[in-house]
Length: 165
Image 1 (cartoon, rainbow, N blue to C red):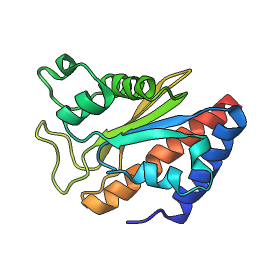
Image 2: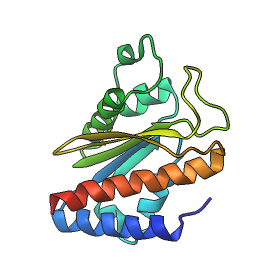
Image 3: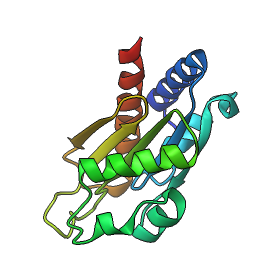
């Protein structure tokens, strides 16, 4: 996989906005497997705004890398927007970043064990304000969803930052 033209353009705009504001960003990604970070890091000068990130695909990685309380995953039935928002805030705090974008979803080819269809992704932004939204691609192809979820997350972060201007 690679960073496509739309992702690159979004990352460039996000980077410019973050630099202009003097802000930094952390990334807590799951089903995108590092692609959000790759897009943000593809922009020259990323060290001025990119605080760090991690692929938090499992509960142990969420606990170890973001420091989330494992109790919030008791009776787990899938990632909720509120749960992902807490993960984003934990990673933002852990890396002392202004913002954190987090995503978790079902890339496919099958749906989740609790009945959700492949193609569902939740995106959360933590920072001076918090936002959460659930998206559905309607696609069951794993690689296509990973790329699509990356684009969705970048569009979402871009719209959050542009809404502050």
